[in-house]
Image (cartoon, rainbow, N blue to C red; front, side, top):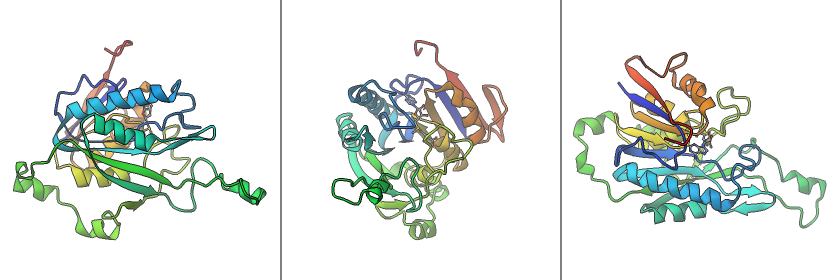
Length: 279
Ligand SMILES: C[S@@+](CC[C@H](N)C(=O)[O-])C[C@H]1O[C@@H](n2cnc3c(N)ncnc32)[C@H](O)[C@@H]1O
């Protein structure tokens, strides 16, 4: 039996979550004012970085000693200027107390780009200065709070949470380059949400948490992390600012058509909606 809680509000504060209640944080924050997805969401880059700082500090507080925080994020091109979000997020997480552990590059298939084919410009104008590359890559940055005590996990729990070595080797989990197909346009539940593919939280949850532990996604979106946490026998906590995503998240997680608290196969799903001033 697993428990799942969705908090509607901003993850700048995570007051519903106790200190050290969480075993793994995996998320994908908005990529600043990304054209199409988050146009003009933040008044400027400083405001965006301020949110990231609060979220990093709260993540440090709620995460257990030795545990991992993972961000899927990328630098963002807005009006011809690239914002160094990955570098800034690394610095912000380090300043919050985390150790920067690793960076994995997520590569999307060659045939598909979600936003725009900028490289076409040079085909129209095959001259110097018309070069605008298409972006196939995103970053997955991994941080750790202190050191993990490997002896704290029982033999039984280790056994139950074993990683499939065949999957690990054949799908290239061992590399710093992960080739994963992104969510395709037209996917109904992910409409208007820049969702990441299920394979991404699947790998992270398998690699960095044990069965029955609690996984947090502070920018829950359509609930991809929560769904995979449930499928893998982990508890989840999601935070999402947009109330209208509640039915999408319920549906995606397999808790559709219900009130705020109910049980399904003995797994439970609870929604907490904060008041207007965030209380
Ligand atoms: C990139 S999407 C996450 C998509 C998610 N990984 C999925 O697979 O569906 C970022 C989400 O963060 C939400 N969001 C933006 N600011 C937030 C905040 N301060 N607190 C909580 N959620 C926020 C947005 O509404 C959006 O749904």
